Length: 163
Image 1: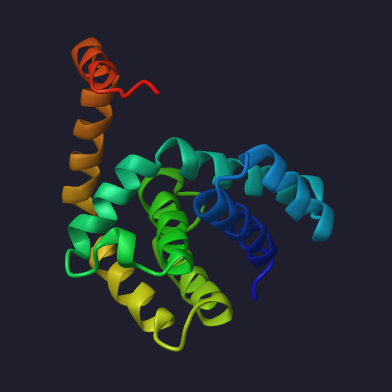
Image 2: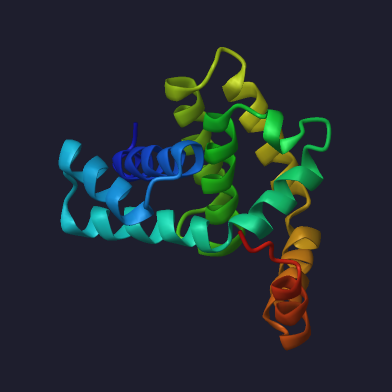
């Protein structure tokens, strides 16, 4: 795997842990970094990637569901779902690497951590994402604006269930 690969592996492992067992992201990342130490710059990239995905996970999930509607999100393999989140974040928001690099890295992660068909699935979904990136970027901006508006915040707050 290329040099950035270990950053993405640690970010994927922490994201998977947060997604599947709901551990605190900071603690999950700390444990992953203890197991697989990274240079400070790589650790910073890993942290930015993990927390960027977590901040934007609702929008990323909506985009992934739009481009892969035949795969209900809750039925998608957790590792595939989190690889797609990482790559979608890099392609749509982070843009620290060219999209094809992010896709290739995601496919490699799918080969390592996913099932036999994961790499094909991830490649197909991300190929669609790249093809529709212009439209999806506009949609993502609208979603972010609506979530930031006071009316949307009040509406979300009124739907909360208090236990």
